[in-house]
Image 1 (cartoon, rainbow, N blue to C red):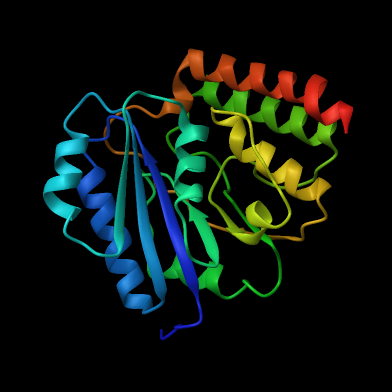
Image 2: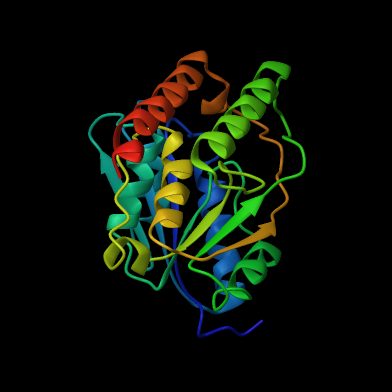
Length: 237
């Protein structure tokens, strides 16, 4: 499908993803080339200690449309995403996990609703690859965000696309460095009067590696950032 009007920066944060980073980045590249849109890919290596950095440089450093950003140390998922957003130059920023790379179906869905909202929120049915503990944590998190912040969306932690103007012009500034960053962005965007559109985006199960969301430390950090934000900036404004 020819869609030259769709201008998008695809941001993918990675941390120790040597087993999938080349395949995922190549799949994103292939999908964007098929759509024939105005794009760039921004891969943020968040201080990986495995071979991720070398693999990215070896396979993609020569691609003009691929930016590779390296953090000297692990700064957290949210900080990695924001680092990508800060380097973005296109009209829209599409944030996607490394274990669920793009295809033309996903791109067509997002590109078809760009004129309808400032923020396009992807949602899933079910959570592929999630353990019972991860599912319970996801349910509790969803209830807390919906109730405390009065924002009704199907999914807060999946694939999002933002008009880059919400950061540059509407002054949406996010403080969370962990996974809560995604929800915080939506909450702040709502407070700034941004418009929303939800679309279904199918999730594929991770085949290698360990999902960050499965770690107890990540779950605890996410809940801590939620509560700090609620009792801090959110209630002050």
